[in-house]
Length: 120
Image (cartoon, rainbow, N blue to C red):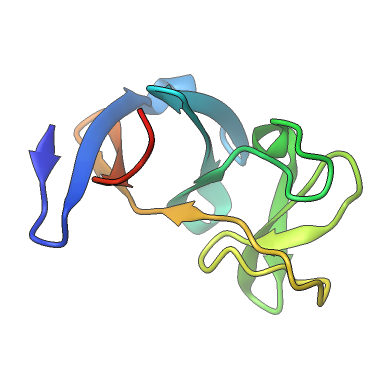
C-alpha cells in the first residue's frame, strides 16, 4: 500500500478485467464495502460507498450508470435516486449524498484511495 501526502492509502482492489464495461462491482477494504465502476463510454473509473443512503442496503454497485448534463451518475437499483460519481451529491435534490473515493489504474490493476481513518 502506498501513501499520498494527503494521508490516503492506495489498495489494490482488483484487475481491470474483473469489472464489467459500463457497470460496477463491489470490493471490500477490511470492513468497508466500495462500489467500483468502469464507465467505459467515458474512459473513466469511479468508486463510491456501496451502501444506499435510503434503504441502508449494500447495493449501489448493482446500479445503472449514465450521465445527467454530462455529469457521470449511478442510479440506486432500489429507488432509482441518482448520485454524482464525481461528488457523491444526490442529483434528485435530496440532501443525502454518498462517499466517493479516488481511483487510479496502474497497468492492469485498479487502486482505490482510502483515508487513513477508514474503519478496519
